[in-house]
Image 1 (tube, rainbow, N blue to C red):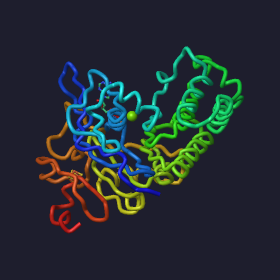
Image 2 (image 1 turned 60 degrees about the horizontal axis):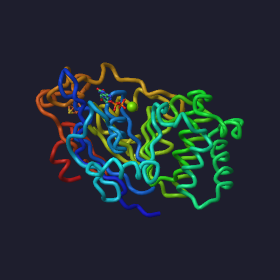
Image 3 (image 1 turned 180 degrees about the horizontal axis):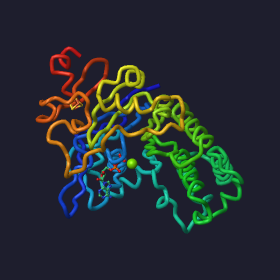
Image 4 (image 1 turned 60 degrees about the vertical axis):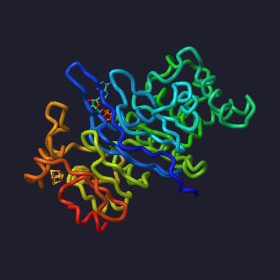
Length: 329
Ligand SMILES: Nc1ncnc2c1ncn2[C@@H]1O[C@H](COP(=O)(O)OP(=O)(O)O)[C@@H](O)[C@H]1O
Ligand code: SF4
Ligand SMILES: [Mg+2]
């Protein structure tokens, strides 16, 4: 399998311009996703995971705006392409399963016709074959009475059912990069396992890369090659999945892991560490995590640490790891 870089996000800054001022929801985020790689992004609510995904998809809308950095996909900077070019990418090489899928299905067309359209666009098949594949895909995401659902309109389905249809469509695109933003949170455990298995198959068969946003560290352990931990709009740690679980370096990561005692249990929810993610009003000037950190020192209160390499491919944003270590890493 090729391991070329597919997506490269560099110093991404996405702000929301509110009446009270600019909110830097994504504040200098950098990371890469290689072909066929699954990168998990974890962090509490409000850390900027969804805004990072929407930025990559070109779907940040007013009052939000990308104000800095670049997003390279196949080497092309997506922050400079037209909406028309973006539309061509989305649902082709770039596909996303949304946290809130309600808006993404066209209410005027049946599920079947929307699914057929995607399949015909991406696979060399006849109309009849597309129909069969569509129904097959609906069955694979755990939809009962798939033939009937295939003929239904979106409003005739429950929210959970629509979510599964969206997942079926995203997978049918056979994208180069699938961004899945908490794709299975609302679904029951059996369906969730089925969908994760489908994603794994996509990686195996098509060398699809996945950016998986999840609260579920069990899913991370099962799916991810690389893990990115976000806190208050920044990356605070990045490591391969084994290193992250065996030797988490950032106190925030350590807190996340400690609050999830049984990482094997897929239902286990990430519980928050004492305190909350800072808002724009309470944003510390030094390390953004210091008010909640058991290791905070005066230096942490005064100055922001930068993201440093500490060895292996592990990156950490914390003063406990000084520049000397970074140089030898
Ligand atoms: N539509 C919006 N309007 C204003 N602020 C927003 C909007 N969407 C997100 N934000 C801000 O961006 C921050 C990060 O949000 P988000 O990326 O959705 O977090 P999460 O990590 O939970 O996915 C939020 O705390 C919020 O302040
Ligand atoms: S820089 Fe200081 S406050 Fe921030 S995580 Fe590291 S030890 Fe804690
Ligand atoms: Mg989110």
